[in-house]
Image 1: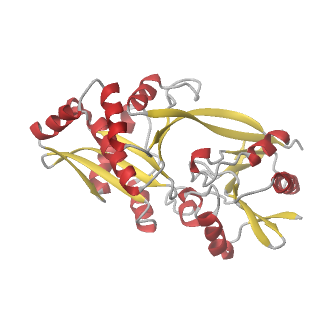
Image 2: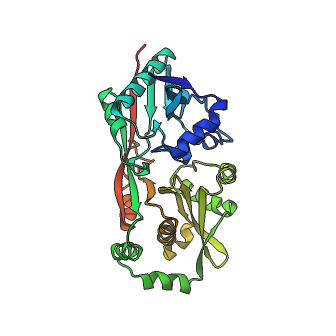
Image 3: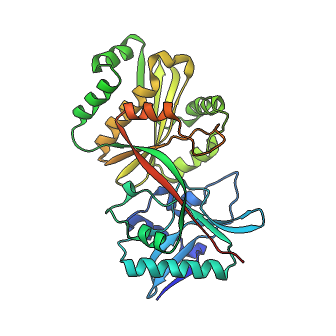
Amino acid sequence: MITARKYQPCDKKEWDKFVRYSNNGTIFNYRDFLNYHLTRNFLDHSLIFQKNHNIIGLFPAAEIQEGHQKVLFSHPGASFGGFIVNRISYSDADELLLSFEAYCRKEKFQRTFFVPTPSIYFREPDETLEYALLWRNFKVEENYISSVIDTTGDLPGKLSVIYRKKNRSSTYYDRLIEENDLHLEWNKDYAQFYPILLENKKRHSSVPTHTLEELQKLNALFPAGFHLLMLYAGKTPIGGTLNFVANDRVAIIFYNMIDYRYSQFQPATLQIIETIKWAYQQGFSSLDFGVSQDPRADNPLTPSKKLIRFKEELSSRGMLRKAFSKSYPV
């Protein structure tokens, strides 16, 4: 029998251990990541599922209020999460969901909403749980277009494809760097990076997901999980790319930002090419290039065609990031 219970602080060690060795766990699921927020308070309501007193699954989540509805929501401090599991049989997947729904009804949640971990993060491909979700009438409420760069195989071949798609050559980019005194540097200078990030987001009528203090705190909590690439013209910072190491298979290009006064130097492209080289060196199988929605559109799912095209030129392919929901009327 599989049972569901609420996470307690004393569970932290076992929670993190399960994430580390799970099939689909990421940096977003560790308790330190979920708890790092300096300016945002979430009412954590994460769940632990057990079978024969052993953990069989996790569900990082928060309790939120939507109007008059009490909602069990995919943890707002994480890009995605959903059910974190190891290799799981269909029978256990179905029983886990029955336990989850019984818990939601008992605690008087009227709705649940969550963003599962995309399939590229899985140690082994496995869609058993997704099938069980559909069978139990969980609905795909939202689909986001995301982009993924394959970082396996032949690196020179990968770069030649990018140069061809950009109608450029490697010599062109080498000359661009040399003639304009550009250099790329991996460092931890978030104070230099953050003004560029703020200005980029301002151009698109938005604000960064993280404050400067949060980025610095995350870097202190996960020093091996955050890698900042800065681009300089002489001594002037003109761009930066912040990569999250999600797990030992995938890294995430979380922010790729430039100072638009130097856009003629193509900093965004130079930064991604260098990040692809880094991902190959680190042995990752994929780079998650993130979603490409237009935040200014009336429909939040509206694709940003220009951004998608830019990512495709850098050899990415499309991937859906799904959001599931289910209601429990009172």
